[in-house]
Length: 391
Image 1 (cartoon, rainbow, N blue to C red):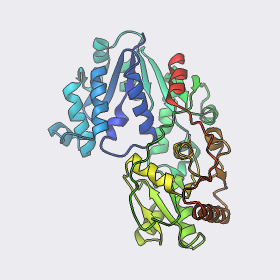
Image 2: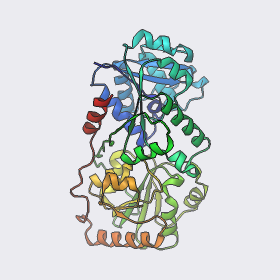
Image 3: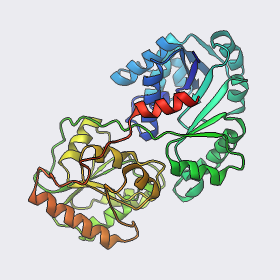
Image 4: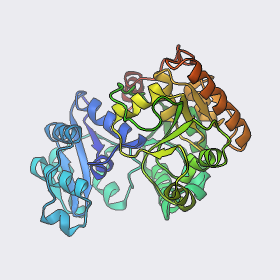
C-alpha cells in the first residue's frame, strides 16, 4: 500500500487553542489516515523537522484530544514558542522516530519512508525550498481551501497575500494533485493558475457537534442569535454590530459572538470594548457549548463577505438551526436553498429578516420552524473515498 506523509505543522502550532475550520480539516486527515495503510507525520519546528510514525501520530492525536500539554522545555523557550505549541513540540520530540536540522530532511526521509510515498499538505503549509528539496521525488498533494488572500487582499493580515501568492506559485510548480474543497474553489484556482495540476474536488466532511451544556447569560428566555467564526473583517461582524447599535433589531434580541478576536479590525474591537446592549463576546467555548447555543438560538447569522467553503452554516444546517447568510456562490453549493439569503450590503433587509426570525422564535421556543430538516451534510467517508482513490 502507498505510504502517506501528512504535514502536521499547523495542528501542532495550534495546540492548546480552539480549532479553526482549517485546523479541523487537518485533524480529520490525522484521524482517518492513521487507520488507512502506512502512515507518517511531518512537523516543522523552529529547529528543523520531526518525523512521526503511526504511533507518534496517534500520540499527537491523544495529546490534542486531551489538551494535557507538557510545560515548554529549554529548546522551545529558546525559540519563543507559545506555551501550547512549545508543549506539543516537547512531547513529540520524545516519540519522533527521527529529527533533523532543515537541510537534513532528505536524509531523514530516506532512512524511514518507503519509496513512492505521498506527501499531503492540507493546512496551506509553506512549500519552502528546504521542504521541496527534502521531499525529492515523493509525490506531493495539496488541499486548497480558498483563494481569498488573492481575491480579497483587503481582508488579509500583514504579509498574508504575498505569502499566499508564493504558496500558490509553488503549488502550481510542484504539486502532483490539488484537492479542492468545492467546485467554486476549483474555479477560483483556474483563475489564478496558468498551468493547473490535476484537480480533485472533494467536499469537506461536516462533523455535526453534539450539543452539551449552553452557557447561561442575560440572553436566557430571550431570542438570541449566534455568529460563529474569528472576528476578522471578512466575517463582517460590523454589519451586525451596526444593527444592534442603531436599534434596528428587536430590543429583546441578543447577539452571541462565538470566536476569538483576529486582525485588522480595530473599529469592531473598539465598538465591542465600549459595549453594545445585548451583544456578548463568548470566545473559546468548546464545541458542545457552541452546538447547544446554536440549538437554542433563533438562528445563525452569517454575513461573511467571502468563503472558501462555509463550515458554520453547514454545521448549523445539520443541527436544524435557521440560517440567514450573505448570498455567496459557495454557500449555495454547500447548503443549497436551506438558508435565507440576503445581500450583506442591504442592512435593512438583514434587520427585517432578523426581526422575523426573532418573532418565530418567540412563537415557538422549541422552534420546529426550520428549512433544514432534510439536509444531509457531506461526510468524511465520501471525502476520503474520493481523495484516496485519486492519490
